[in-house]
Image (cartoon, rainbow, N blue to C red; front, side):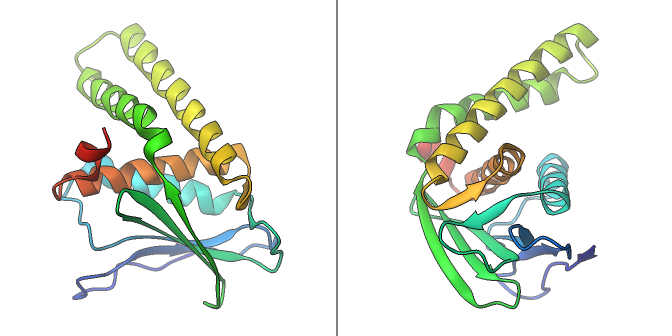
Length: 188
């Protein structure tokens, strides 16, 4: 696996990670809109890094009607919509999809609350309490992944693990946006 870092000195830098594998119906690179900076938030940085690493190690991703991957995916938030720009490994544009986040509003709000509760509980609460909070987080995460998979079904074929990791990246984008005046506040 090869990793490309942030482009320094660019206001619109993107965070990109790439990998090479045999399957063509998969993602080989994921980029997040780099115009929103995480204010040295180690939690968000870790969540983003883990989601991208896991996503690139194992995923199923194919735009409907197109089977000439592998694909690069760029995720951005524009006007309270998720913009998914899909291109081939060598950069040729395949398709862009705009996905309303309104159906995810409750799940994103609940997921954010539970993640904050889990973060606050670590080191303070009993292991049983932490496990209960984490079980709730996983339940919300699974529900959101199933909704994402269903909402994308006419546009992109993804498996449930890919949907889970993409939902994590959507959450990271929204939290980054919130620090900049807020998609999450308007969404929630």
